[in-house]
Length: 289
Length: 289
Image (tube, rainbow over all chains, first blue to last red):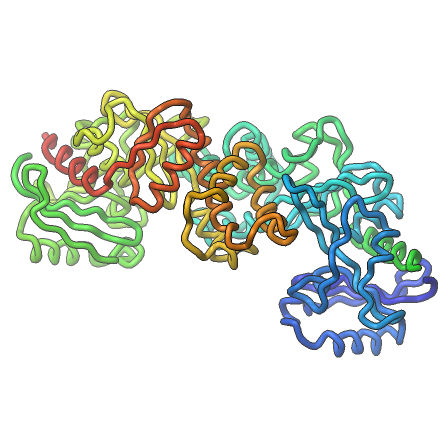
């Protein structure tokens, strides 16, 4: 389809709206009405409010609003999946007016995987020329995806529970007192990245505490070290050696992943996630049959 | 020293008291006044109450009461550490009347480690003939220790944050709905044990969710699988091949570790922790100069 439309990035904790025409954002807004806040109710009213704000245009929704914990469940499209397959598989809540982008599934019984929301950024990064059509892309966050793009389509991918695990350790574990501060990719972080490949994660995590108690590591360095352990273990799961890795992330977290990628022999590139999302939604919109 | 004494196993969440004479328990009690509940106060009064219950005998305390979050900090003894070294290094709160057993430190800058409370069970297991003087011992729980005993002394050891990590995942993670039930060491558990050696832990944890969403694993099997992943990763850290492994644990958790040990090529033996603790305290008591 052509013409203006409203793209909504409807995640677990946040929602971002963009009024898009010809791939350009005319206006946008953001709030914290993610699907947890919605709690399964009021989606029609929320979309009516978005149209009241941006104009009465068609609405294309991506993200967790399409999950079984969101508004309507949009069944997964099987990878390899290009933008055309996704555009054909939209879940139309109101034909021609309101649609939800499906997630993508990798149906390998030995390494099954799913994504929901990430597919738009991936396809958009390639469409906008921010990442190559056959590159290795990463999407750090609560759950980091490593994705092999194949001729611009989403190919094999894996997911590491890195951000969630760090948050659990930070909030609830025996290490929580040490994990509060800002993380920087200095010597302690790189120590963690190295140890993640050299030693078992479960013992290194306790070793972070023991090393501090015995005076081998400053308490102020424990957070950087533990972050390095987890991100290092995550990056080590990617087939990286000598390859370019395109990291879709904000600068703070993206900088940590870039440091780990470089330390483990890859060549990191940071990609702007907003630009990738907008390009992805515009591409899918243009391909709707 | 000889004669009757009161042994207290003063942990983070619980406290157990034993009146011991000649290595035999004359009477015992147990409550939930661990060091968290004590919150740094009232130790003198608590010990007076123990003496009022069991008689006015000397008191020997082991466990987290001797940590910087307990009553008085008893500095670590360096490993290799035998019962004689520990008996010489007791922290006497009141000479001849009340003492605290020190923890043990492994001061290797590449793999520093500490224990506090575990040392008594380890030494006691060997003293009571429940484990050999040069065996490999494990102590599953919040933090599992793998310990190489050397001529009856505590040698090199490592610690895996296994139980704590499972509890974090069970209570707070995206997998929490699936991790509530009882764990049994069946096919799904052994699948996890196997995957722990074959795949990165961070991706297998998310894979547990993806496999369920895509129908490759029954939701009822997720808890067993995730437990198998973590215990399998833990057991894989031990130098196990073909060796006997002596597991100091209750039957439920010990049974899971035994299954993982057997699956990874070791020969598991369960050791009674109460008997090991009592024997350890009696041994240390007998060696006080």
